[in-house]
Amino acid sequence: MLNGDILISQKTVLVTGGAGYVGSALIPKLLNFGYKVKVLDTFWYGDDFFEPYKKNPNLNLIECDIRNSNKVNESLRNVNYVIHLACISNDPSYDLNPKIGEEINFKSFEPLVKSSIKNGVERFIYASSSSVYGVKTEENVTENLKLEPLTDYSRFKAMCEPIILQESNENFVTTVVRPATICGYAPRQRLDLAVNILTNHAINKREITIHGGEQYRPNLHVEDMCRAYLKLLEENPEKINGEIFNIGTDNLSINQIATLVKNIIGDDISTKIEPTVDNRSYRVSSKYIFDKLGFKADFTVSDAIKDLSLAFTKGLLPNSLSDSKYFNIKRMKEVLENE
View 1: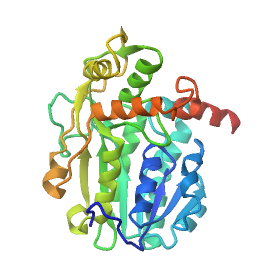
View 2: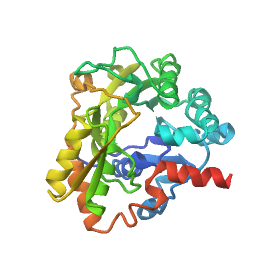
View 3: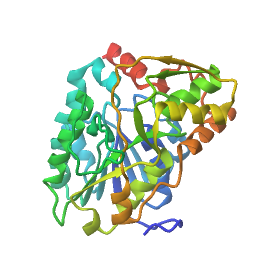
């Protein structure tokens, strides 16, 4: 079990999309806890952030598109656990090419599940999204509320959930997580998510633009997302099999996030308010995962803002307003132009 010490484990974890924002923070932690790790990724955003670990014999970087079912099946050999992160993430990136988005986010999912079962995978954790709830007026949205996804991205996230859960049995332990919007610093940084966008602009433009402002978003520090995956890998299978867990911390309006950013970064930050067509607004409850597993977030949105500020100070995020590696939609455009 997790206790802060290095875990000695001979288990092999395959992380699809492991070179993404969350994966770049998660993979070093898995290695530190003694897991053997396979990263299955297209590496559209590179793999230089794995440089310190590339000589680690327990790390295997596999360049592969999740749509390549034969190579995916081959990669699943001798794998104990799967954490499925791979997807075209965020609505604008998805909308660039809905056909590719559907192929990656939905059509490739059932073949991945079937191959996992065929290869004797013991545990499968699926990263869905809290965006599947759509617009909710409840102050605390729980896992049993109706899903009302507003976009194809969130719709396909929701449609994958029953595919994996119906396969649950004592030999194939399945868990769905619905993370809040991730924030904070990671080696493969994203700067196209609410907290991260506002922090980047506040530091480097001394100006932030608020789109709407009253809509609520649940948030989750990337470190807590990693902690949750580690917890699920080590948890008693009976406690997590066939379960769905919201995972989040601060439920804040965009206006409240902007206020936090200004308070931390500086009062000289100017603010613009613009209308938005993004009507998603919801506040998730993470009470169930605490009641069931004792898991709660350790970090806040303020921590994420401070972590990002420190990363900028250290020069870890150069060209943060223009480099496509920080912005999924920019990099997706480049990828599609070169196909």
